[in-house]
Length: 220
Image (cartoon, rainbow, N blue to C red):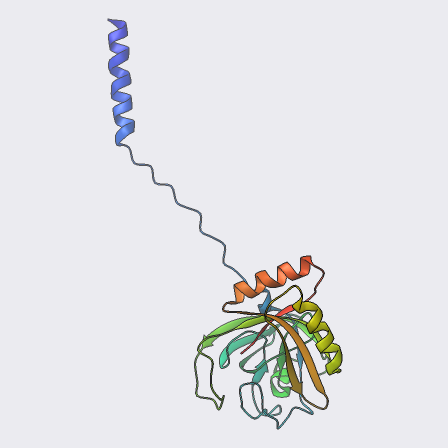
């Protein structure tokens, strides 16, 4: 009789367990923060003031609240916070750069003054994307989508750039030289033509393992 009672209890217990619903809240993934949104900021003026930016606009360093960024789409509105004093300024991306390792944004002089950057020259900043808005700009023949590459060298000598390109072509595909003209022409050697920032970051990580130091830039 005792065994029978124990058996009945076990059946009732298992039956109850079978109908009990346990809700487990799945952990939410941590938000992905791009390393291109935090680093050093600088500013630029002469000899670029009055020239066309990469977007096709005329650069007005002294009146425009604009900036250069390597990967953010043109006309992206970004809030730049000076981490040393907490001052903020909202700028619109209309150019490409900066091309110095560790720097994430180049501001116009007017924007630099807003956050107390002019005297220091370079300060640590945090960027926050406020809005991405496609505005009409005089950019000729826009590409159908963004493209990214990894810049591995920059030379004043065209021959030096071409020598590096030939060496890299023995191991990598899509090796190109981009020519930029300021006071002196610069020849920038890049690898890849990736359709997403994440793919370009993976390519950069692979290149670093092979002792090729580079950083991701927007190719279009």
